[in-house]
Image 1 (tube, rainbow, N blue to C red):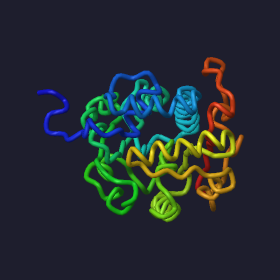
Image 2: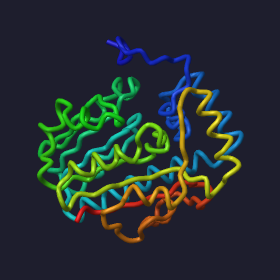
Image 3: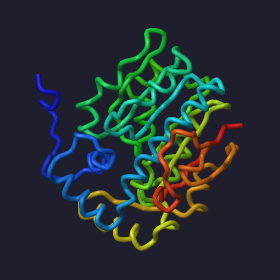
Length: 267
């Protein structure tokens, strides 16, 4: 069976996940996605570098938390799988790590099998759920069977909440998810900011809106409020390339990244 059988991917409509895949040089994108992504790249050629910097941050933060002893991860807004996926990084440190991926995008569902190749000692699961319904997401079949929410969990919300405007309850959603997690849990986020390239970001908002995707870039202060009540770990809120950079990371400037990042622990 073709992995797309029975899944309505709306291939004639650009989709942010497939556009992101295109920025990363992937192949899970179609003409409408490439056209919209081309328009975006014409305005902001640094989008490819921003996508690479975000992926590198995901790997570094996951590894850091796994080395610190966290062995459960909840990755919401997973996106199209790009190896190494989060579970590969976490289980590379601790083979017993458990990872749940969550997304409401049919293109991700069609590739979910790539997210389930766990080590024998660990476990991975994929749940179809919408982050704007955190109660339903946390109750989704597969999540509770895989993760023990009475123990610390690393909650990853990377490159997601700039697609959740305040009008859609962004802050309430994050607080709901935070409240469900045990002390010692971590919140990991990246977020587009208008502070690096304001004119280009303003024009990108219109391109994504035309593709049917609402966006809300946030300032450093606005982004930092997502971590309220938790303890930010060093280097606190910084552009994605500056969060504990590794020697082999791609060379990306703050302006090219255009994103802030942060990791915080629940007291």
